[in-house]
Amino acid sequence: MKSHWQILVVDDESIMAESMAAWLREDGYAVDTAASGKEALTLARANRYAMCFIDLKMPGGMDGIETMMEIRKIQPESVVIIITAYATVDTAISAIKEGALEYIVKPCNPEEISILVQRTIKVKNLQRENEILRKKLNRKYQVHDIVTKNAAMQNILDLTREIADLRSTVLIRGESGTGKELVARAVHYSGCRAKSRFVAVSCAALAETLLESELFGYEKGAFTGAAAQSKGKFELADGGTIFLDEVGDISPKLQADLLRVLQERRFFRVGGSAEIRVDARVIAATNKDLAKMVEDGTFRDDLYYRLNVIEIQIPPLRERREDIPMLAEHFVERLNHELGRSVERLSSGALRLLMDHNWAGNVRELENAVERALVTCRGSELTGEDFAFLSQGRNAHTLVIPPNTTMAEIEKQAIKVTLGRTAGNVKEAAAILDIDRSTLYEKIKRYEISRG
Image (cartoon, rainbow, N blue to C red; front, side):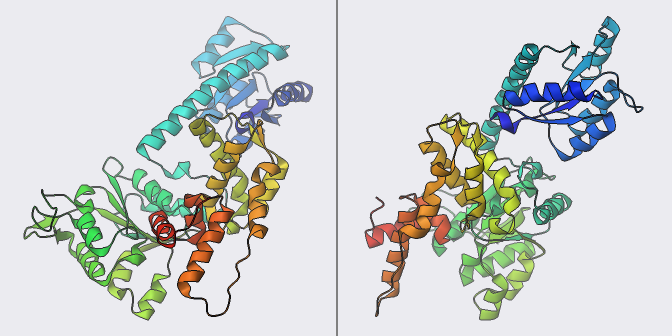
């Protein structure tokens, strides 16, 4: 996406700056201009620039070399091109020595500028693709990898930086699809445990006996099929972090077992008699109101207080709509690479439709919607038509509940309606229904629901 890469032109001659900006905008790039080094630094603190064209001679006490050095402190990855009207060997050496990619001489040639930018952006795209691949393979996301400009989310990111090196238990609350695991990974990989394992466990996906074996491991012969000793997730996370997703779904027995691990940092494998000691930081997540569950007697109060040492409440996407354009562009960029597409931008109509949608499934639903639109898109731009399924879904099905309808029938109808909205996409439907994908598959099979 060309528009993803922003360019800054710094020149005290407004005609020169605007001319260069106009050439670059014609090529499809987003361009800002600054008339001084001071103004350039202000822009660099607020925006990320792939490239900066900086005039060497500028009034105001800050020349091009100094401006470049200060910008590179703020954005080390930004490529800087020095512009000069008087090219000398000394000028070139000084510019390159301080970090400029190269320098160009006024009057600038538009074709030369275009080729230079294309070459640089091509390298940037390759670097970005490598970064995406690395993160996809390793899933090592730090705080700066979270895409947001929402004030509440910025406060959350500030908090995650502060707690990254602590061992204190963290409870992340938020609706399904808000990115609870991403925040948990950001805490882990931004702190001193980053070189050790991050182990994620879905507490809602397994039955009690299976979850107990998954968490604590088991000894050979502990039950039918236990042919050899197996380490549990807590052991595997020793020295690192264990992420307990949907912790509100664990049984009373496992609540007691988990409390003991949090209190004493030790446990027994299933069927074992030797205590296992671990140093694993626990980060738990839930979309349920654990405080209400404590009041209702379905969740232990002592466990709740052990888990809720540091609480992070992630706002739903509908409460941070300013993030929708950024997130959508981020997903287009990443999914372009994964799906082998070359969509360059989202139209204003598409962005307006995305901004108006309710996003019951939050960021996960938005990602699924962008992926679906990319798959069906036939041009270089995502338009409102590519997202038409979002508005159609609100009106295409109506849930009617006849008299004497059972809960099972209502559940079956709700699943059918949601699958209709998502055109059979189980991942997206599970996010909207706020249930685990494996649970939805089981219900589809039980009710014999067609996904067509």
